[in-house]
Picture 1 (spheres, rainbow, N blue to C red):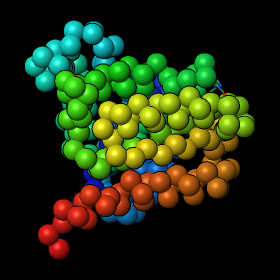
Picture 2 (picture 1 turned 180 degrees about the vertical axis):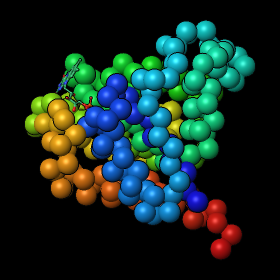
Picture 3 (picture 1 turned 120 degrees about the vertical axis):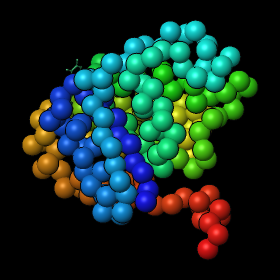
Amino acid sequence: MPKIVALNGSPRRQGSTAALVEEIVKGAVLQGAEADIYDLNGMNIRGCQSCYTCKSEGRCAVQDDMQELYGQIAAADGLILGTPVYMWQMSAQLKLAVDRLLPFLKPGYVSALAPGKKVVLAVTQGREGTAMFRPYFEQVAKNLLFLGFGACEILIAGGTRQPADLLKQAEVLAEARRLGEWLAESGPEDAADSPE
Ligand SMILES: Cc1cc2nc3c(=O)[nH]c(=O)nc-3n(C[C@H](O)[C@H](O)[C@H](O)COP(=O)(O)O)c2cc1C
């Protein structure tokens, strides 16, 4: 059964980002996946301390809730990173977690992640037009590929100050479910490795 892990970087547990993440999860679950959703805002996650223990010892020295997420992300087939746009960027809650992904890069910039993991960046924003912040999230996606994720898709929902604003956008919701299905599909690497 495909495993999906979702990190909601919005402080609003019932907000638009949570609703967008849930729609993606719905698509994945319909495709037979199991999913765990984490609200980062309620978790104890410190900023990276730049100690580089991850390089010398292969593990993060900071003992907080990221330790659970390391195991979850390592075991996941698909990752959903949800965030509202804050000041043209991802939220601070999500940025803390993204910085802490550094242990997935071994010395020499070799990824410690199993190949073929997929990511969806699920973004909500107050601004209606979705073009303005896309280049920033494309840069984030490049960084995730550099970390060793196999593919990254970006979904941006505009004009979503309240969840009701999102729930009116049928096309965005359909795309969210499609991306959830995509996350849960096995990639070409899995097919090649399959004994059947
Ligand atoms: C601190 C802060 C900064 C924000 N900055 C932006 C921004 O730069 N551009 C934008 O379009 N919306 C911005 N917004 C609006 C949120 O992105 C938008 O309301 C979002 O959909 C809320 O998601 P949520 O319900 O998950 O919290 C900002 C909101 C806050 C609270």
